Image (cartoon, rainbow, N blue to C red; front, top):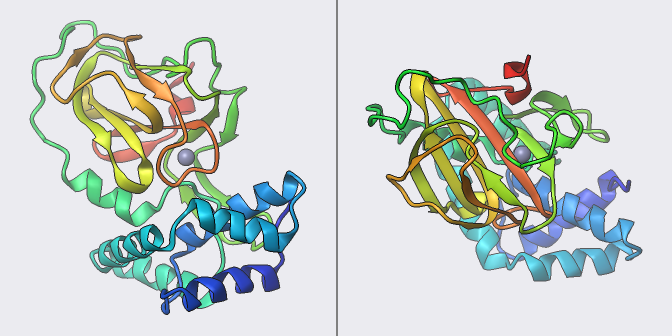
Length: 257
Ligand SMILES: [Zn+2]
């Protein structure tokens, strides 16, 4: 697997600065670009060809909007985060996370606190099922939960969920009974579904190809909610899946026996 050299990453950043992003990009966003470029190189492209191909896929205007969003949400974060975000900007280097953490944290605040009556009030089990039928979570991870280190830059980044490999169109299922609290386009997270469960659990499904449920729908464990895709800032078909308990992201694998 290709990892861009520091001069190449600096080249990407300079290119973005030239295109009207003078403050540079957040680490997460720059990393999305670098990962996409690395994948193109893996397929046989030169660095220059991979760069132009990637920028064609991610129009500058879209990046500028994302950049504003990330900067805006960064302002609302605790000092510790702001310091690390500033460090990321100064260093101009990349994270591996497919998800910008600051924007995600804002979504957490908007979750409704009251829980509608769920389909099964008496026998609720925490979400332990795989969100993809026949796909074992442990053996199909392309990216795990928690702190991890970028292989080249040696920087720590927090991944709030797990990424599961699956082809576009593979059905995605609710991992426990619950109620849909979001279904639609979630910007850089692509088409997404969020389900509120009993006991303060919320499950999140990002980068879907489409969704087949609507906000307010009551769901049963195993019910199809949409299909795997690569919408939003994603570098290939996969499911980003999160489990939160009382708004705190937890490792979905930790719920398994
Ligand atoms: Zn992910």
